[in-house]
Image (cartoon, rainbow, N blue to C red; front, side, top):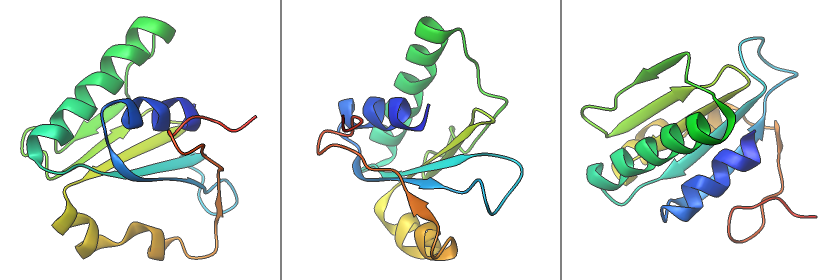
Length: 116
């Protein structure tokens, strides 16, 4: 799921895509996908595309979505995977990767797809 979401984010030109394995640290999700959008419009487009494709392809709807109106920090919770899309200044401010420190990262291909 995390790799699929990361691939969709990449398709919409999301940047600095990171997928963190947090299974050993929290009980509310398995993975966090963190990405940067150049601006609020792109953040909204990324949110919309992830929502559309996961609903269409897998029949999945998020359990919760936050920030999609302002689109400076959009959180989309699919239970097993939580997507965070930030505009650059918000990603710099919150630095979620640092918060999770030594957690494992999923390998993503340069295009955001899973490596074989």
